[in-house]
Length: 343
Image 1 (cartoon, rainbow, N blue to C red):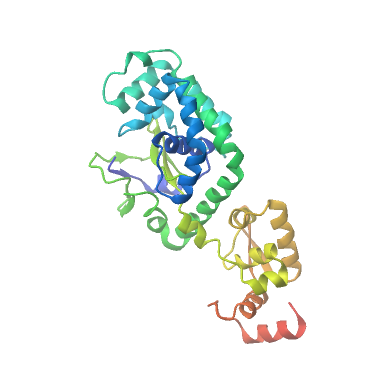
Image 2: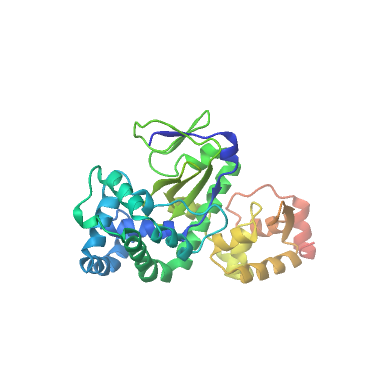
């Protein structure tokens, strides 16, 4: 894979996005491999692996398709399409594209993954539907029941990444996105350490797609749309899920204190939903109370409304967490809050 040459327009138009199909595919790849390095992922694997193996034992053709499609040094392209370019897709819409894959295309992609001719058993007219069926099985049995939690982790990673992008540029946001990836400068993004010819992405669209399993890959569609699927960084997400100080939680209630505590930098309601794990309605109600108390201010940025702590909010937090470093607080503000309450 080597590195990609990315022009300024492609980089400026790139985006982080959520893809249910990418999450399902990463889950399927974990089940297919049958091993996990992370203790939490091992526990999850032990719970779901027996049913998955029983499913494949009943369908040896699909088992062979997956062994070849994911078992070599290259994923079969039709199994890992990039997500749609507009909006967050529904899983059904994404998997429908795999189901509709023509047999010549599916066989050609599998031959590339295998590095040679396919076994006779795969010379059949239903490879796309079989791949879609097993992905649908993983979605229904494994991912969909847990999707709200997984989605919150994904959104928190996107919030953290965009924060890194704002503070340190693309180099900070992409350097640890996946093993081997690094921003080299001069419009070059190293995808991995393989010694392959570079790819020119001029005029293409580029997406970055986080998934919760420890699996990642790259995908593209007819040289027009490229995607980097990468594992969420638990450490990165945790850095943006700080523990709310107990005195502040007792004063305001844990949920409302969690909102105030995370507004050290301006954030939208969508970001707050991702970072707190609370529903949109709950976050909205907490923000209204904090606004009415003058502990939070808001401003418009483009089409988004961003919320951030007021000086009174900073003073309250400083008073509740005296040992924690904070931005300097105006002493007159502290005295005013102590005398009259929030201004």
